[in-house]
Image 1 (cartoon, one colour):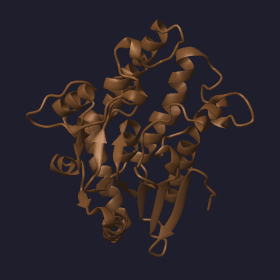
Image 2 (spheres, rainbow, N blue to C red):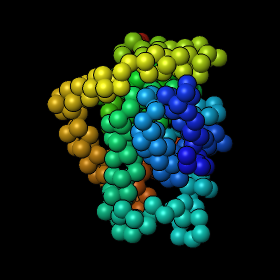
Image 3 (cartoon, rainbow, N blue to C red):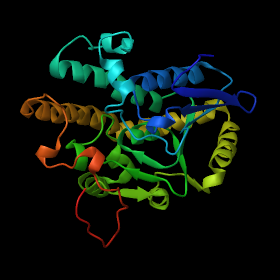
Length: 302
């Protein structure tokens, strides 16, 4: 087994269940490059282990994931030439410049890895808690089943706060629905656990102090299904979704995401590829709290 720094990996129930947990609680499990590379390694480790039937994906600390790491000391060091630079920034487009570099790096580490986890040859269960932001949704939506505790919130604020049309793995319309996606992306509002269950995105909502135990119990039930049957059930649903246009939509929306980045990089003297307060978006650190979308309430601000 690999010794990981940014995720934890353990097998349970005689090795039939692997539990992978994001392990940067001090950064709200923000997705640094090191974390994403290790998560991919852990997923592939579980996939390669013939004893493993089900993979649980969760996070240590107060929330599952706050999304991409946009500027922690760790993240800055990872992409800055020097002793702490992550090796992944020197390959797969990392040595190119401009939009080409950004497109290739995001294609490998934000899009293709998420798609690979969606097609993992094991059943996967996302164990969610806290507020699941933006790129946290990507990791969650890559899983076959989603469970959460009663206080979980789901939100993508990259439209209202960063001027972006979504994240790299744009599964939003398939998970939220078409008009709810437009609303949530344009307002930055969230939906709660019960609404997530009502629209069919969430399978189970557990009491907060029972989340880990109930998720494991759920995983044990899924693990009892013969592996050939469970894999073909997964593949039947995934292929049906792909034939409905899911894969082609992801491809198209990744391209739009890159166009969105290039727009901001072109108009900013700093070449910063996201909207800034001068563009009409709030400062990320000073933005008001995220609130739940309500049927008859209109709020000001993002």
